Image (cartoon, rainbow, N blue to C red; front, side, top):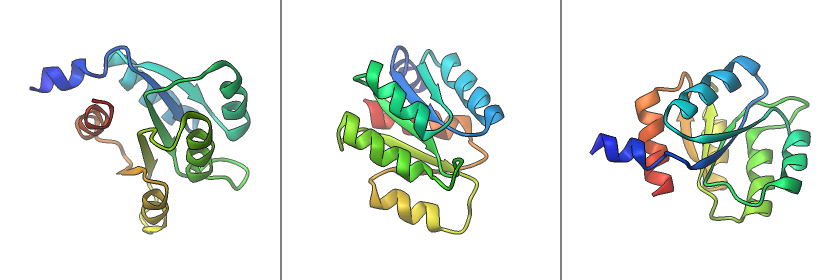
Length: 130
């Protein structure tokens, strides 16, 4: 059954936004190892530029804390406006205050704490993209 979950991610297009280069590279490498086509952006400006050339993604993963007093919630709202409200979304954060989890719920995003546990992330992604 786990093989089916992993295979269900192969070839899927995932948009990942994170302002921290190490996190961006680490999560992207993990996703690529599962056969995922990853589009990486670091901020809302890059995200807006991406909309010009990209009309579809299967899943959005956004880090909560971005630069310039913006959050992953801002990114999620932009993506929902561009790709549609039904876009499956995961919000990642190391923030343990509960604020990010509440905000994720408000935009119908699934909350995932950091550090990311690969098996949990893969399972959640497979569930959301099926």
